[in-house]
Image (cartoon, rainbow, N blue to C red; front, side, top):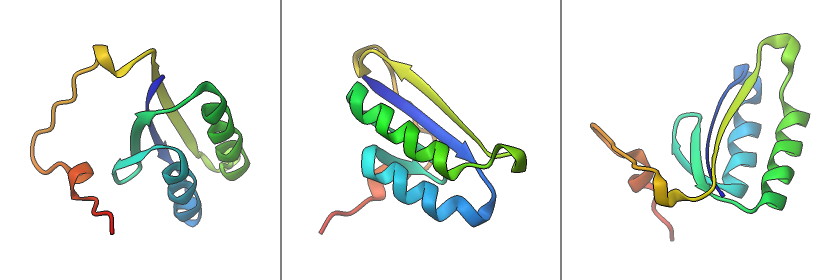
Length: 88
């Protein structure tokens, strides 16, 4: 499946959220991620994120699930930070 995930958490937990999400899907910008992921890995990601967030402090994670990337269109206006990622 293809997912788009974004989060809004207390700044104390931003680093943990970033590190966890990057293990599973690609960083797009700030707290936005996207990518292909299996159902099992998705469940693992959600499980890890639930251990990090604190609902009582207003944290939230929102995820859009698509069966495939085939029926999505990605339009970027301005800089595409996703393309700025360099692998060594």
